Image (cartoon, rainbow, N blue to C red):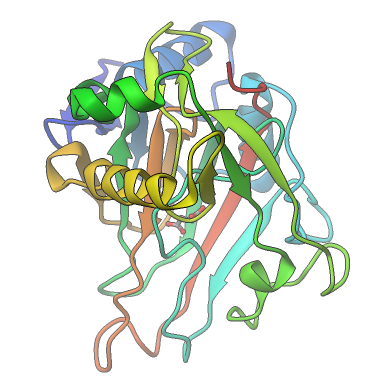
Length: 279
Ligand code: SIN
């Protein structure tokens, strides 16, 4: 089958046709991984993967991760089912972040499959952190290039309190914790420099006065979400998205306003692949 690639923006992201995600041969996996490294986030429509097929594809990328706070499905604990209930206006992931950047080994990649999609609303946006580093103001680059920052997990309530159909994997008091990571990391597969901070979890630059750290982080958060660094995907059911969590930040848009996406469920199955310790 001929592979067709439609770019989603000039910054990153591509919708791919001509690849069957149930084919997990080494040859097909190489094509998928090459596309992922090139575009950073790739989308496939009409791929009705079973849970087993979803897991088998994810395992080609490496060992699977258990979410720090959220419980997986009873039968498939590797799968976190993200559910926005019909009457909920909020959505899991509705702010710019890189998944579990607070872990010692943040997620390498995520494979998200849509199960139920509202008629309108609930798109996901991505932003290219390689481009964000390239285009960052030179003075800020000089200040942060050898710095580390603290990423905080924010605790179980942050993940669960607003989402009535999602359950914790331990108990409600599961504590907040943090890890330090370089603000500019090197991609282990491409060797490219990546700006590795995000609005949701990055709290403080180590070795800088609090006011300066806050000011620089504020400027970086504005910069890294510039629209010209982003792409946006409108879901349909049985679509699959794979993102390179080392190279992008993302934002699940909760635009479920009365008479539109409100009154509908949005359901996604998420599998995350373990990453390495950022260098
Ligand atoms: C996430 O932030 O991991 C969820 C993304 C989405 O549901 O679109």
